[in-house]
Amino acid sequence: MPQRVPGPHRKRTMGRKKKAEQERDDIAPGLVVKTKKRLVVASGSSHPDLARAVAAQLETELVPTEHRTFASGEILTRFEVSIRGCDIFLIQSFGPPVNEWMMELLIMLDAAKRASAKRITVVAPYYPYSRQDKKGRGREPISARLVADLFKTAGADRVMSVDLHAAQIQGFFDGPVDHLFAKPVLLDYFEKTLSPEDREKLTVVSPDTGRVRVADQWSDSLNAPLAIIHKRRDPNVANQVTVNEIVGRVDGRVCLLVDDMIDTGGTIVKAAQALKAQGAERVIVAATHAVFSAPAVERLQDSSIDEVVVTDTLPLPPEKRFPGLTILPIAPLLARAIKEVFEDGSVTSMFNGDA
Image 1 (tube, rainbow, N blue to C red):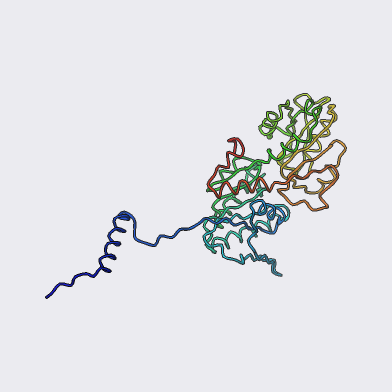
Image 2: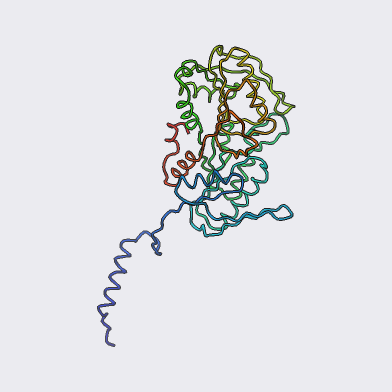
């Protein structure tokens, strides 16, 4: 039987196939597609102004998202465009009502996971339940750990937050956690606004022994001495504080009280009153998270406090604003961190290796 001689077209095909097999001899056969990473930003309902500001900093827009609450109180969230294969950052802050915003975020995480997002990062500028990070008494929950478990179960691959109340919360989440610090934002403001005379008389004050490490870092950055207020809490009564003594010189000084959050304002106001009673010339309060639960607004207008400086990690409606309050934008910091994560850069480098 005569043999068939392969034609020139068949020879070229066989040659290409053989060459491809030589190039991919240890790789499974398949299609090669050039793909590009795509960063998208979505927002919950808790703080849309902050989310829009972050998106603007990144020179993009928020993902069109439908948020609905039914008559029964149930929540529905739906992304109106495809996010398949995207690197999505879900921005949700946790002012009141905390539990409603928590449930909305969990539903958004589930929606993003089922929409085949490639990686999902929760951007929670203020981490919910962060003060419940350990058992203070028997039979108490560790709710901060529960929140981390809920994020992971719902579909989060990564968490980003600002000034966690306790650093160990980073270990609660089974995945990468980007712990950002608002100190550069606040520090830049004080370096621009404090006069040379104020800088010479400046003393950084920790409102309690638990914030000494943070206050010490502020002291180093501002080249100012440190004072510490010793206080006691009644474990059976929420938001009740007693100031016992002040360690450090505050007489005739400009005192900068630094803390991670202001809730009802009880701690800060009693600390400010104690400082003024000891002869402090001025008292300036700096905090990252302005929770401002009632009656914080009334308390913070006390004559012992000269200025309150916070960031906008939480929404502050008009009724929570007052003369002497300065609100600094946190969006540039969040946007830069998001960009570093997306581009596989270094978040730590943003804080001189401290993050």
